[in-house]
Image (tube, rainbow over all chains, first blue to last red; front, top):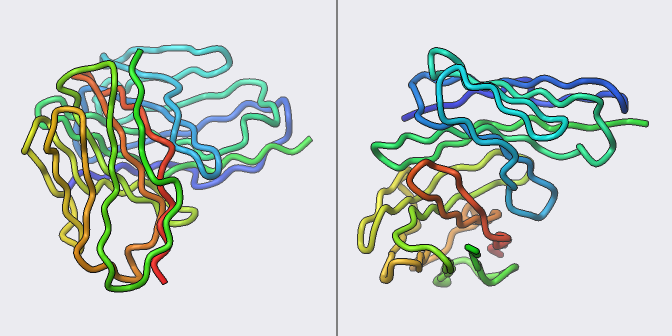
Length: 111
Length: 111
């Protein structure tokens, strides 16, 4: 089946630093999505990308849909303590309506 | 606006007992529906997804089954729970382009 490899697995950064994480796939997707999950809750959608090459921002977050449609990255600028959580990428295959998640990046922000 | 309801929030069940988790969506029609399981500190494993009433795709052979008796209702079941069925179960819905929205999750502990 499809696999999404997400890196890094975890990050420990200082407040104010920029963060970058990425996702790669063995197959192409029609839509790339980025989510954040906090303990005990369901993931919350941050950014959705629909076209190869698309670059989209949501406040301090910026994500891009890779040209090959097999990868995506998420950048967080000027991190703050409330950015702490687990970030997941997800790829959607339109023909099968299947949504597959990456392995997650755990972000810790220190003051 | 669309909402997704998932219950119960927590559940403690003995080994060998049956399971039924229910998820309902409001405010949309013909959604794609998903069940995921998340082990502690791990990623989201896709268990089942459905593109319509009675249409279920299974991703992982296991002790669980899913049903979609109505357009906006998705049920996860087991006849006999195993210890390994413990985890955080998440229901989600998406539209045609893949943006998925999650319920609050059910934490299942099999004892």
